[in-house]
Length: 626
Image 1 (spheres, rainbow, N blue to C red):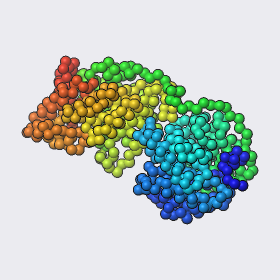
Image 2: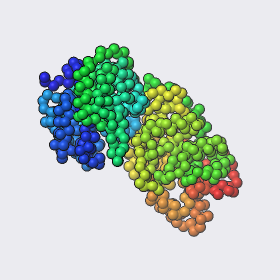
Image 3: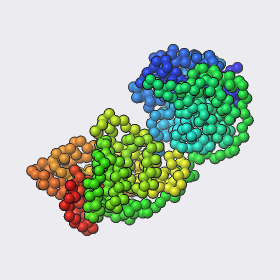
Image 4: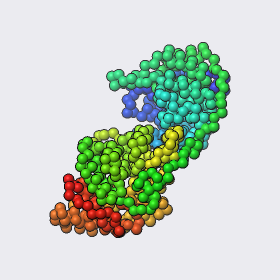
């Protein structure tokens, strides 16, 4: 019978193959290899895997191209071989299984975040998927398997990209958590309806979990989806033994669950990580013993717009004292206070009390500046607010956490009463004390801003309602001295589009440079708080000019600091320069963030005297910097 996937799936249960990557790993391919490139350098090995599945009676084999998109291939220096690797993968599969079985072109995620969580646009993502799909079409695939996705926006881009080059059938599959929901917490009823609304031919779930967790998702999808449903679980959760990942579900166990999948409404079954030809052989026997079950579905409108669950946000003027001041157009002053390297906050508490007496609006707490290991800024902020009564502005960076972890932190921070945030990407670990530490960078500051903005509208990253919305005041960082100014402005615009309500700059020493930046962003109407750094010495000035990205200290200022001959004169000159910067910037900014080099908070207070009509009283600085 001629191969015809759409007719097959209408008439009977269709059996896909099992794992490719773990099979190649078992055959001795090291994990640091590009498995997709084996289509060019070790075609016979890939072909042997396909043949082993064909021999046990599968209907469809998937190409060895799961990661063969340009983003992932570029990491191996193979970005110019996308079409060749994909076409070769399709030809190998066809050669292995002949003309009677179907070959599905396997397409996995890009490996980068796309908007709104990352800088890659949906259009760029669609083009990347189209490039991969074109190679698979050239190689002669019969259908596409878009699989192991968790971000619905990326799935849409993948389908759009494939549809731009082919009308062949598409099976699209979401990956799961142990609770049966997607990795972003979306229920099978919701994502199933969303997937079914796309121009695809079958929808389903695959990877990440074993068959038990997947069964519930299949049953729940079957209630709302009329398209054929696919189920391709892992052979359980891997266990590490002798530094190897071993999947321990037996073929008989997988076969029993295949029967349950079919009884639950699945028309496509197969396997993912850890499954072998032996598993597929047992599943084939299970398919022969059970008939597909008729399904009764209910119509569920796909939830594709965020507005469907969004709540009205808390007005800006009601979120915190700081946000109320910004909303009213008042000039605000923040003072930066580094968290300690240990756990003792006594010195910080003394400084915070003096800053509060001086009338400072809030204390700005960096998050691991220059990738250093310091106390959690949230823990410090909570202590300062509770024991001193001064508001804090918590830096929160993307370096150390994934998107779901960040969401958890944000919900916890709101529960604790923290309201003011500066969302930043963060310095890479190589700049800090532990250069071998691992960074996450799951999203950048734009994606993080989108996430917090969404929480402020009562929805989580999966567009699930969270109840009452959070009430964060969202600030972001901006660098007026960036080397690539066009990119910096573009990213600033994206941050504002994502929900930023205020921006805080790097330290400003060059007024002309700052004004050039301001002229280019006048269309972006959010307040800008200028970073002001009182230089402590000529060496400090040299460091700022040469080792802090985006900071330019002009020669005249360097000369002024060079001429100081004592610590006292250097401190006085640094304060004078900072006051001059502040006076020059006052007409163009909504506030100042004043640093306190080496923890000298009295220095920061002195700088504020440059603000006309200052409401800050003079305070006794005795003991303030100790």
